[in-house]
Structure formats: structure tokens, C-alpha cells
Image: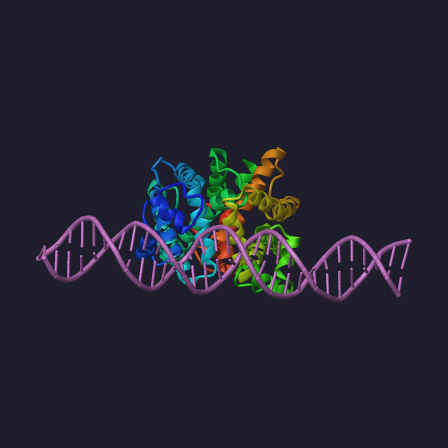
Length: 177
Length: 177
DNA sequence: CGCCTTACGCTACGACCCGTAGCGTAACTG
DNA sequence: CAGTTACGCTACGGGTCGTAGCGTAAGGCG
């Protein structure tokens, strides 16, 4: 439940937590629920700093997220539940509620700040504004996860800078700059 | 090995393929290697059509990729090996070689076409151009995977259009509409 | 034709892990 | 002091991975 479970077995978790395996099953319905809760707690560590510009804020949260995914227990646990959720509709819904929708606060907060600074326009239609926020979230989280876990290459300050430029200014600017 | 293995057990795979379980172990070292090969074959179906504009090409490949991830066997197999790769360095390298680097051809092809059309500048430094291509790949693949498997919401034509606008023109344009 | 190599099918097995049942026990409550 | 609650512990059934051992059918070759 804290850090370091390299193997994701209930027996190891129980041993590491200093409790009996049956105690875990009394508190959680199964392995999936336990891991989702643990990952949700880890993700709650993320915070959006106010560094004065949208670009700096995005870069900072990207690096925070990458640092979170660098911890072995986070990447293993997150990918394990996502993999399992491809065959379990209820688990997918639980992930969406406990992790995805919960962390969208970061996108909404960043957009609000950028609008207050005049860096982003205030979108008139609230429904499409929500769609845009969802899109941003999938792009940021997806890119960092894919870079870290699929491409298996590091998310360093340089990558964060390039990614932020692409996100804010588009492909033309990223290719030119 | 073809389609439909909702459960990812070697016994089921063997039965479905009409062979004995031991035959699978004679051909592949283990479950991981088998699934990586199967996923690599599935991903080779992807093609980049030439629709006359970079935006149209990106939208098309995004929808193709989403259709691939809509198949239950693809999403289950892909996420299973990625999850396992968080604890297996050799498997991660195998994924990078067999899937990631192999599909970067799509990005390189799309960029070349866009440059021929004059939609994108030719980057003078080849090293940074490669970094940009890697970045684009992680953004596209990551966003589609995250949208489909983590957010668990559909990648439809409208989402593909919004995503492509964001990718090509940046956040300001996407927020404006 | 007879022999040998190769590949496959099949059964059985050990090892590991999940999740549950049953029982004993310590702590807390009134 | 009696009742409730929560926990520890052992044991177990079910399922899966990966392997060992043996039998057998197919194809090359003198």
C-alpha cells in the first residue's frame, strides 16, 4: 500500500502491510478494487503550481506526472488495473470515477488560470468547453503515459518543453522551433 | 491468434488455434513473447492514406487506430503486455522494437507528405526532427489509447476532428473553436 | 522399401496465486 | 462481565503457467 511492491500479489501486499491476507479481503472486494484505491491516492499527490504562465504550469504538471510514473509501484499498479479493465466494465467505470474524473480538476484549474491571465479565450458554449477539457486531459495524460510506459523513454525537462510547445502552439510551431 | 480470445490464457489460445498447448511453448518462449508478436501483426494493418491534406491524413489514421483498439482482443492483448513490461525490461525492449519503432513509419510518412505539400517546414537538424517525430507519435498514440482505454469514451469522427485541430494548430485554436 | 529426423498431440504434473471458510482471540463497549 | 467487532491464522478449491515424458504421423534419404 505504501511503496515498493514489485510484485502485485495479495500475499505480498498483506505481508508488506503487516496484516493478514484475509483482512485485505474484508476491506476490499478483490484485488482490483484495492489497487484502484491505492492508485487514486497516489494521483491525489498531483498539484498544479501557479508559475505565472500556462506553458510553465503545463510543463510543471507534466514533470510531476512523469515523476509519479517513474515510481515502480505506480506504473505497475496503474497498468495492471487498466489492463484488467479491458475485460471488466465495472472496473472501467470505477477507474473513470476514482482517477480520471478526479484528476480533471488539474485541467479545469489550469484553464481557469490561463483565462484569467488572458492566455486563453473564454469559450461561450459550456458543453464544447467540457469536451475541450476532456481532450486536453487525454492528450496530456496519454502522451506522458505512452512516452514512459510504451515507448519506454524518459520524460525529461527537454521533452516537457517540446511537448508543451506542441500542445500550445501546434505542429507547425513544434516543427519550426 | 486470430480474433476473439476474450480470455488471455494459453489454454484458450491453444484451443482456439487448434493446436496443443505444448506446441505454443515450442514456438514461443512464453506468454509475453506470443502476445507481443500477435499485437505486432495487428498493428501492421495500419496504413496512412493520402487524402490530400495533413489534417485529413491524421484524422484518418486516428480513426483507424481507434477501430483497432475497439477490437476486444487488441485492447486486452496490448494492455496485458504493456502492464507486464513494467516489471520486465526485456519485454519492454521487445515492445519498442516490434511495435513502437515499427509504427513510427506512419509519422515519418505523414511528415514527408506534408512537407511535399508545403504544409510543414523541412527541419534542418535531423536529430531534432527525429525527436519531433517521436513526440508526435507519443502524442497521437497516447491520446487515442488514453481516450479509449482509460477515459473509456469513444473516439468518433468528432473527437478525431477536435484532436487533429489541437495537434496542428495548438490549444488556442482548439479553444476558439 | 526401411530408417531416421522433426514436429506435433496428449496427459500429467509442480508451482504459484486468487479468493473463501472456519475457528480462535484480542480489544472495545456498556 | 457479556456481546460485538475486528483481526490473525491455517487450510483449501479453483485456475493458470510452464515443463516432462511418451506416443505418433509426416517427410527426407540411402
